[in-house]
Length: 263
Length: 242
Ligand SMILES: Nc1ncnc2c1ncn2[C@@H]1O[C@H](COP(=O)(O)OP(=O)(O)O)[C@@H](O)[C@H]1O
Ligand SMILES: [Mg+2]
Image 1 (cartoon, chains in turn blue, purple):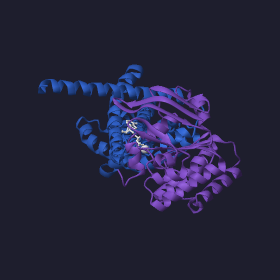
Image 2: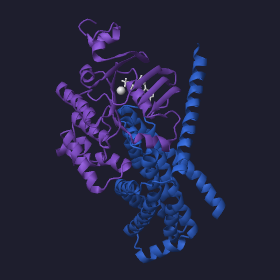
Image 3: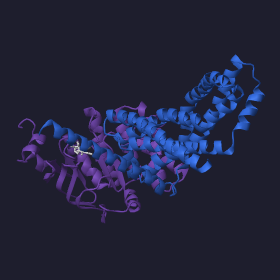
Image 4: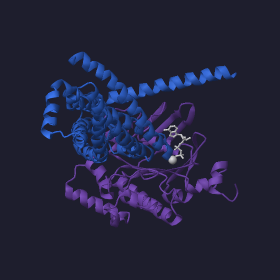
């Protein structure tokens, strides 16, 4: 076989693998919707994962959120001043944080922290036969491991994001007071006046979708991990990469969609 | 109790088992001997419905396992205990929670009954001290014994042992084999054990099957195996000749 056709073979094998992967992930995702409303609901597990998720992500997202607001204010201030629009700064910060930066940056950070954690946890349960052990004990591992984690992520992300949004806006205020004397009350009045219902709802709602992506992709990579400790490591890395890509991609679609619906 | 007929299992192009048949009468202890990688775990997993053969039939307690609905399979599994090769303890739970797990899922017992059963079971494997430890704090041999305790805590009718003695020192290995044998006697369970440990086979088995090259090549009692002419059986049973 010559080099040329070998290249094509490899390419088509890669394509097929890619399509298979997309198909498997779709089936895996659809299964969530057919299992989530069926008893038993394993609420104890959901609560455990909510706790765990919060504890894992809060320290990091708090820092990043605050500093993100700080930087945004520092960067925006000179630009706005140049156009004589300095007084719009609080509104500008609030809108960019709530509509876009808060949700996406939080989701990317949580994806890095939580999606890989889920993939590693579930993956090591796969390779050490704990998933088989659940099954012989009459437990549906998908419901017990996947549904509970995905539900927890979906509930938790909007809460975490709302908190990050607040910290980032606070960070913006701190940056302002360092260089300008600005009143706390004035800043927050501006922030609140600039935000409408149609900025907040889509911004928060899409984070639930991001949470879903983080949970489902982490679980999928863990569930399908190859045996051996290398398989678990690979699953964790792949989970972060895939989750981040999906978040960005889905965000693009959702932004388009919200602009279409809310104008 | 268990009737496996002519099953075929493969992963993509790799045929692992082909034409395997196995009969396990009620109350017997069948040991399947084979080299590592021949598909011993695969065979056990297909009997309990964790893997689905492409062809053949697997009847357990009179019911066909292949193609069985999940709900029904779960009902059947209440009669099973399964000791995994590496114990497969739930590593997010303590030893106590690991043992409680099957009881809460399979049996309707009160809290006191559950606690009593857990402690009784730990005494049986001589690990009552470890009740509040996490699996990561246990040695391999301890994990194996806990895995065994968890598998039999519901008093299953059939117990599957996947290499119960592999990776243990000879003394612990012998203790485990004896424990398995003792349990058979005490609770009258039927068991299927896969192993490559000859001593385990000697202590546990009422009947031995040799799994080689995708199928069962020989079957008989321990003494019959000792006199076998089959090369692999001789390699197992008469290592000084092979
Ligand atoms: N889930 C799986 N996917 C692909 N191949 C598998 C899988 N499980 C087992 N195998 C293959 O089947 C063969 C038998 O494995 P196994 O039953 O674990 O052997 P053992 O007799 O040591 O228990 C091995 O070659 C293994 O690579
Ligand atoms: Mg094995």
